[in-house]
Image 1 (cartoon, rainbow, N blue to C red):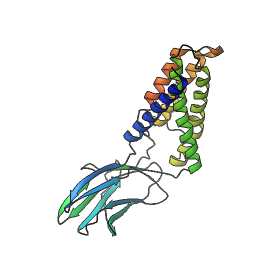
Image 2: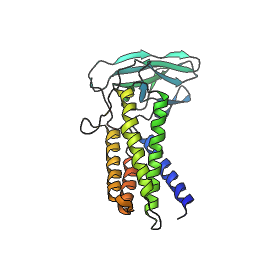
Image 3: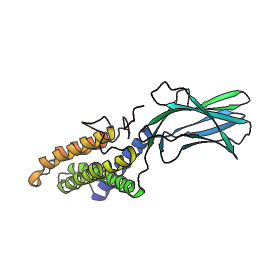
Length: 261
């Protein structure tokens, strides 16, 4: 297998895993369309927001006859629902969810109305939004780049291990180093900014992002140990590579940090 083709395949696998994770994660906005007032209204309801300001909920509705309201309460509580009406700003309806402490969640419903006909956005079930503290852009960019690089090198190491003519040892060392730096050094810094905790995975919590990092790191440590003295340890490397890619198909932030109400 040519090296250029191997790298191209590694890039495709990495991008596919990253795209799938982004599309299936619990913080992905709820999107859809409803027919109301003789028009089709598209919407995008957020499920994640920073807590340095109230969270804006905005819906494009050019027809002035369309009004609406947002109902919200703390997630997993029996608090009474709070109603907030939408304010019209040109062709848009705008309302706000009050900002919450880091890792706190709100359940909310958006209902539009036109001439007495109501249309809930996102279905009948409430949408859940989690608030987080703002993370400095530089820290976040470094974390994303290092974790993307670690997935890319992990994929390339597995592909290289399939070629009997090549030794994946150097790539294993790089992958392990990147996972350590991105997942166990920069990652906790990001989480500290966002949710006030450096680590929320095993043995302190159930955050799957942290636990995914822990398992991936364990796989690459095993591959490192198996390949000591320069041995290719192809089976271990392939297992670590495949395991890492499969682990990263698990949606990001699933069972993530959550402030108890």
